[in-house]
Image (cartoon, rainbow, N blue to C red; front, side, top):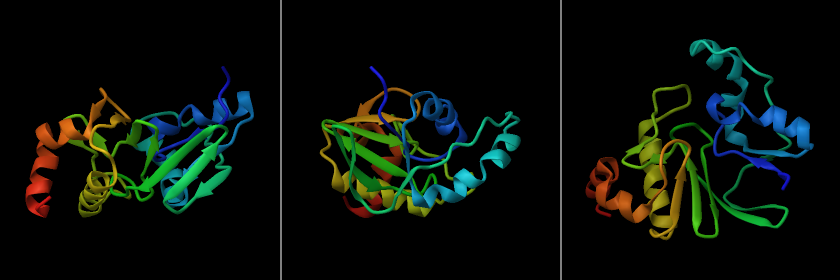
Length: 168
């Protein structure tokens, strides 16, 4: 089975490192939220900051902006803008699955201390996620094991505190 497109939740180097060679090999488009342009433009600097030799920076073929639907072949993704970890962080819903990138993890949430990160924006995005998605859907984070929103609402200390603070 060959890939038909690449869509990223955000543009941090650990999430885009394989985009260029995959684009070249399969001649497929790369989709990214337009608000990630700053992060993508800082790719070489970020690599240097972490002592990593930069690979070829991928070119984005399709910049998306608004929440809504993105179709890649037979796949229809619902997108939800979730900035905070990065300015253009995006959640992608496909069937019973939500791809959240580094916005939410099992037992934790994304860091906001890198360029473009903002804690209060991340909190707003987490509320947006809680209010937008079915809590039984499978959550796939950019790192670590899968979970569900239901589990995170019961066990994730960040979400528990946020829900208390927001009266959710």
